[in-house]
Image (tube, rainbow, N blue to C red; front, top):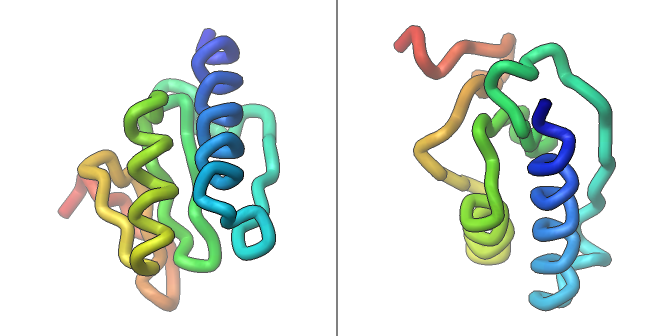
Length: 93
């Protein structure tokens, strides 16, 4: 269902990494469903362990721009995050 948008998100993220010359600092891996398809497309940021839901072209560019500035990326669409011990659901807090 989200394959078309997921491909656009992947291309946007990789394009923005190239535009900002971050390809050597940030590695991308394209996956199939991460088990949260109803929230897709999903982007997962490691090592922070933050899962971002409902990604699109705009959020993808913002993700990379914020990463260039710092490690603490807030898009307002966080689904899960890692608190140092376990994954937590952002929506339940």
